Length: 310
Ligand SMILES: Nc1ncnc2c1ncn2[C@@H]1O[C@H](COP(=O)(O)OP(=O)(O)OP(=O)(O)O)[C@@H](O)[C@H]1O
Ligand SMILES: [Mg+2]
Image (cartoon, rainbow, N blue to C red):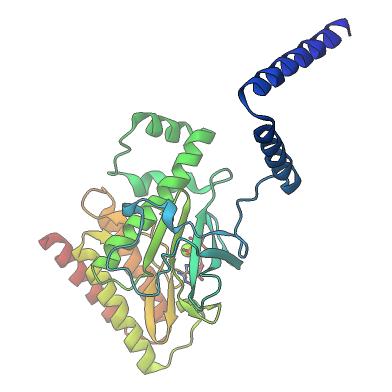
């Protein structure tokens, strides 16, 4: 107790000393002005950095140039510094990530765009046991990161979530540039990938698995699937998890999603197996709806030739 009152009186005397010093340096008017400024700050309470509307300031300017989508930026991309992001809800919770619908808008204007925000989970990530197969042939340049990932420490899981996000953003960028039908990648920041929203009026386009195409539509969708696979193989990639659940159909257009595990078919020792599985998984959905099985076999043969010729 004695100690405590001691330190209080020490504090008091220091305070009085400082007060004296201030009196010596500043005129009474200046001191009165400082006093008024201090009490104004106090009246306002803690400084609020949040935007006047929306759930956060747009994070566009927080991404480095290479963490933004390829140029030219589509005209719908909102780059204004005064823009805000609204959270409109969850599109889908998945095993590895949750996909949210967000709107980026410039308050006081009619500039607004819907986007999909895919946020990788770090802590309770459970899918890492299969990660080895996919990432074989990829280098973890910083050995501290690699060791941590191997140990699956919390640090490793955090790093891994960021890596999956980065891998998806990279894949979207490469494939978009190669002409594959993927959502335009807007930006990546940490474990969040923001991309073009495929859908209308806040409603996501249905997954291929949920569509009931007639014969002509089925043929068109299959042709698009073939073309997208050719373009990917020309770039040296297999999707790695292609199926009627990772593709959506919007206004008759087949769009390929979910690309963090994209497989380098040459660097990965199981590259060709992944390619074969992709064709089989997607193809089986089409054959169950009337596509001739031979089309699937022919596509696989064609892709293998294409891949080996590269
Ligand atoms: N850009 C987008 N536009 C519209 N809907 C999207 C978009 N991205 C994802 N979705 C929706 O969210 C779902 C999940 O996305 P994605 O497959 O990329 O995540 P995931 O975590 O791998 O999910 P899962 O574990 O179910 O495979 C998609 O099937 C689709 O319905
Ligand atoms: Mg998926």
